[in-house]
Image 1 (tube, rainbow, N blue to C red):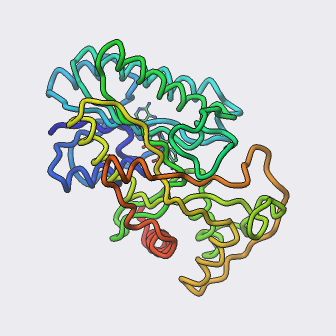
Image 2 (cartoon, helix red, strand yellow; image 1 turned 120 degrees about the vertical axis):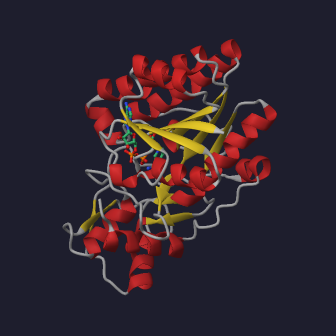
Length: 324
Ligand SMILES: NC(=O)c1ccc[n+]([C@@H]2O[C@H](COP(=O)([O-])OP(=O)(O)OC[C@H]3O[C@@H](n4cnc5c(N)ncnc54)[C@H](O)[C@@H]3O)[C@@H](O)[C@H]2O)c1
């Protein structure tokens, strides 16, 4: 099977590309390296380019017959999307549209899409199931919702079958520490906790300690990046076998507060995490937890590594050994 993976030099895309290669898939990675890392590509062919470059896509899709596209390439910072929405609508919507058109023009039948928990906005019921209303509260979430809607229309009109995954908080790194999370600037809690503990950045600020949760700090759902990789493989196989389109929430059904993450890291490593307690940030829901029954039932997916100890251990080892 030949698969084009956009954004395959990024955090989640690199773990997924490696997993697909281990499964015997012929992988071509298309990444412009705007946020990704050449060192994160551990096999397959790397094409450095923009997934919104129609001429490049025409060339790639003419040179080789692809069975599917797995689309990770996007800008990913919620805060930046509020400050610079045009940047986000251009890359996450316009470039995705160019990619979709090229896929359809070249008769590629299957598309896997990195959506996000951000499509849900403020949850009205928990855990968040797939049929929860989509009501994003920032431009980043809007771009992901539009992506899902384009896919629904492209299936109806052109028969393109797709699988959209709404990840909650991707976390952890490869067990062998050869690839891992490397965002600049880093905005995700677990690397921030570890870098603060190692003195690589100032003490962490816990935003809000008066939420209606166990200890007053926000609850989030963490899913190991290698569990995300297996879900993408199962999801692609599923839509190819059944010729359908589906959306799945990917989380662990378990939420942890920010303070629980800090304490768990201290317990796993014995290293104290310097932190201060701060005020709430605008737009942070108290609790985001994914229901994952659908992915388990339809895909046979089991998050095997998404327990906190494994996530924190892998993330700590990556931070100690990281090469990019
Ligand atoms: N990290 C998370 O917790 C999380 C949660 C929900 C959804 N997502 C989604 O998952 C996907 C991957 O996220 P990530 O954390 O791995 O981000 P990342 O920034 O590490 O990876 C994105 C990759 O896409 C590349 N890219 C961006 N625009 C491109 C373009 N126009 N052409 C070619 N390559 C381009 C970047 O260079 C980078 O390598 C994104 O679509 C993101 O929105 C991530």
